Image (cartoon, rainbow, N blue to C red; front, side):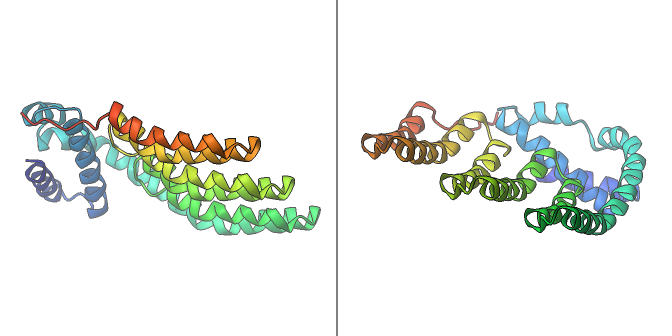
Length: 221
């Protein structure tokens, strides 16, 4: 039924001469809405009541399409200007302070801005920019503290954040992040206390969490 709804919505939007890129974004949004309701255990009838008919969907979004066009216009201009702005900032700060490193990190603005303005959901944007943000944080900490280890553990936050902001239910997220949290806890405790044994027992939290928090199965009525 989900595929049928999305196909009908696609056909209706094409009949209204909506731009293809807008259609793709709308379909992606409503696919995520549908799957989100499925994970909550709603029946197909309840989901369609939440989403409305394709005509209702169009009526709800048509007033935002013009605003989206305006937003995309200035976003494209800003994206085009970002490499130039980054270069100016890099040269000015580098010249005035002689701190070419880590000033070069300003160029991470380019991919970050590209991700922030890609039109996807905020959760996807957070997941997308996180590797660049954590890379910058890691290099800054190294630059000013010279603590390579255990600072490198910061990169474990990349999959953790991806799991947290995924469209999964909370029990699945908890099960997903447990191995990474256990690894961080094991390394930090072992490193600072030098008690690797019995600290390794923290890994038993992985099967324990899996047993205590079983994944929920979606029930379709």
